Image (cartoon, rainbow, N blue to C red; front, side, top):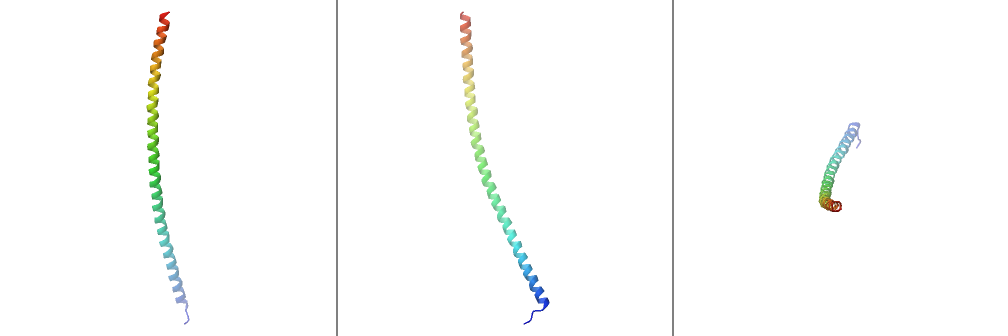
Length: 92
């Protein structure tokens, strides 16, 4: 059975259409997979960043509380030293 020119071009056109359709389908599916994976990674990173931010916030609050206690102790020491100085120099 001889194959003439129109049949060859028709087969080539069908083959090209199938190949382009397959490549389009694969590209679409790949972009969907990449988009979903990026979204998953973004969600994971966001959760981790929020957790680290909460931990750092708690630590900074603890440091602030410690500094407040130290500041009150220093103020108490300053008052005591002032009282001692007043006693010492007035007693002379």
